Length: 412
Image 1 (cartoon, rainbow, N blue to C red):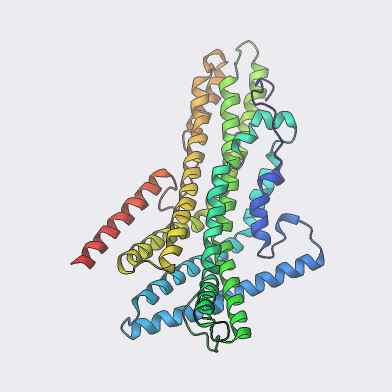
Image 2 (cartoon, rainbow, N blue to C red):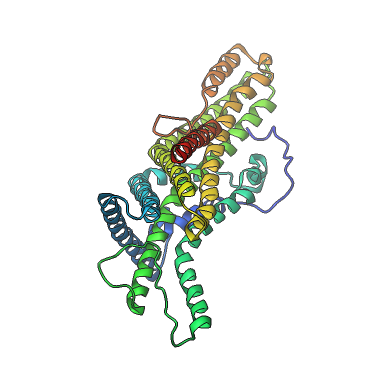
C-alpha cells in the first residue's frame, strides 16, 4: 500500500516509539508506575514507590489544612483577603490535581491499551519513518519549551518562599550582623500545620512536605495532558499518512484486484486508527472536563488577585504561572483541532484522487470512506464541548467578560 509514495522527506535521525513516549513515560514513573512493562530494579521500584507515597500523603495533609484555613477565614468574615485568595487559588489547583490523578489512575489500563495499539501500528523501518513523515509530527521544540516553562513555573512557586527567606536573612545579616539576624521560616502556605515550624528541623520537615505536595500537584496536572498530546500527535501522523496514500493512488478499472487489495488494506488501517481515536476520546473525556474547569477557575482567581493586590511575591508567581497554564491549555486545544482536521483530510483525499477511473465497486467503497471520514475525530470535555481552537477562544472571551464585570463591581 505504501509503495506508490515516493519518499520526499530528507534523511533525519530516526524517532522510535520509545522516543515519542519518553517524556510522558518519565512523568508517569514519578508516580511509581512501571508503565507498560518497563523493567526496573527493586531499589528503583522502592524509591519510586516511596516518592509516590510521600507525595500523596503530603498532598492530602496539605489539602486538609488549606481547606480548614479557608473555611476558618470565611467564618471570621475574611480578615485577611490576600491570604484567602492565595489559599483558594492553591486549594482549587490542588483539588483539580487530585481529581486528575484519580481519573488517570482509574483509566490507566485503558491508557495502556491505547499505548500498545499505537505501538503496534507505529512505523518500524527507516523507509516507513520517511513515508509516515515521523519527524514532522514529533514533539516540536516550541511545544517542549512551553511544557518545560510550565514545569519551571511550578518549581519557581515551590522554591520562592525558601529563596525569599534566604534573601531576607542575608539582608538582615548585613543590617544587624550575623549574630542578631533571624531566619523568617517562610512557607509555601501561610497556615498552621498543628506544630511549630519555626525551628530548623521542623521547618525542614514542613518545607519538604510542601515540596512533595507541589511535586504531586505538578505531575498530576501535567502527566495526563502530556499523554494526551503524545497520543494525539501520533493519530495525526497516521491520518495524514492515510490521506496522502489515498490522494496519490490511481485506480484502474482494468485491474480490479489491485484496487480491491489497496482499498482493503486502506479500510483496515483506517478502521484501526478511527477505533484508537475513539478510545483516546473516551479515555480523556473526564480529564478534559477537569482541565476546562481548572483553567477557568485559575483565570478567575488570577483576575481577582490582580484587582485586589499590589506588587509582591505572590503576584510575580501568578505572572510566571498564568501564561504557562494558558499555553498548556492552548496546546491541548491546538492538537484537538489538528486531530479533527487531519481526520477529515481522509475524506478530502478520497474525493480528490481519481476515483472515477476505478470499477463500480471501488467507487461505492470510496463513497463509504468519504461519508465515514467526513465525521471528524474530536476530543471533548465529557460530551459538553469539543476541544479545539474555538473552545480556547470561547474560554478566553468568557474569562475576560467575567474579569470586566468583577473589575466594574469592585470599582463601584
